[in-house]
Amino acid sequence: RSVVVSGTGLWTPPESISNEELVAAYNAYAEKYNREHAAEIEAGTLAAKPPSSAEFIEKASGIESRYVVSREGILDPERMRPYLPERSDDELCLQAEMGVAAARMALDKAGKKPEDIDAVIVGASYLQRAYPAIAIEIQSALGIDGFAFDMEVACSSATFSLQRAVDAICSGSARAVLVINPELTSPQLDFTDRDSHFIFGDVAVASVVERRGTCATDSAWEILSTRAKTVYSNNIRSNFGYTARAADVDPFGPDKLFHQNGRKVFKEVCPMAAAHIEEHLRGAGSKPETIRRYWLHQANINMNNLIAKKLMGDNASAERAPIVLDRYANTGSAGSLIAFHLYSEDLEMGDRGVICSFGAGYSIGSLVVEKITL
Ligand code: CO8
Image 1: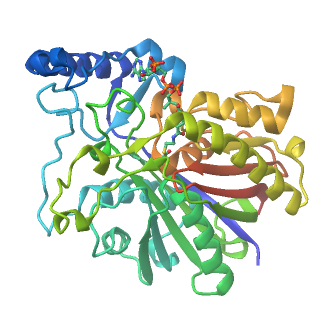
Image 2 (image 1 turned 45 degrees about the vertical axis):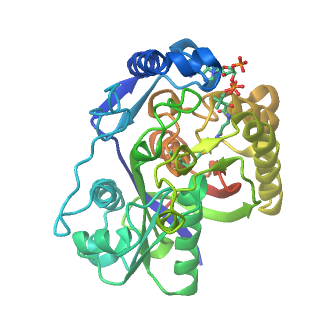
């Protein structure tokens, strides 16, 4: 059965933080920290916090600014984490609210109503709570009949959840699936760590996946082939979890937040991702040079440039592998879908593209798609 993506939605938070603003807050925090711990630092029992720099961030990552749900708190040197007031059980939770906003846009784009959808899948790097599933909350908020569930595969949560949607449609358990990726990353980021304080941003994306025959649009993206791969690695890790309470450890200690060995990730993931895409394309009867556009995971500009070069050689360009991390930063699993949403309209019927994520797990997920007329 032919399965298509018939509409996508992108919800961008209204607030953003530039590198300069982020660095000013971090440096004020670091100066205060060093002042307050001057004796230990002098005695050599504690390391001083070195200053961060906007130039380093842009050069090392390609990130110029990031969207966040709330600037309040992140830019306060006394706080260094967002302030997101708790909501009552009767209110829509923040992650569901982000997801609903992106989902409504995707439904509009696909010309679908809630009654056309049979399943909701939420895939994200972090979930605001264990249960009830955020996906079920969104299902209820949108008035969708059927089933819904959450899944977490870090950076590949979006591509893996799209693949589960294809499976649900092919198996006949759903006519159409709403896939939602609300990436609320800012609460998990250690804004007091200069190695990682600049990396992430908040965003939500959504996609309608359905059978070609039920489409209400003039054109869509046929999913020709999907592929997923995971290889265990500790190089990107968050130990935040419910067992911290029973282990008598600080549930919010530094190892409970996002941390990584960025250099190793860079070295190991780039060749894996390029080889994965090449093999996937070969298996799907395509070649890298026939692919009109690559919507790649957005973690680091140098990583994307290297992978694009491995796939396209001298023909690599921002036009063929668009970048959104300059303004969105790394948005967990959503980056490749943001690129797809923003940079796919201009392609012609019959053009093929690859959506590919790579990162924590390690996990790599890819979809080969072709623009079709209906
Ligand atoms: N300002 C100034 N200097 C700095 C800063 C800073 N902010 N940070 C580090 N430096 C210094 C270092 O201390 C080092 O100094 P020295 O040479 O004296 O030791 C020097 O700059 C170079 O540091 P690095 O070697 O670390 O710099 P890199 O060029 O390797 O760049 C990166 C660091 C940008 C982290 C880079 O390694 C990278 O991007 N690697 C790939 C990482 C990646 O893709 N990670 C995947 C992320 S995981 C994911 O996508 C989803 C996870 C789930 C979501 C999580 C939500 C919170």
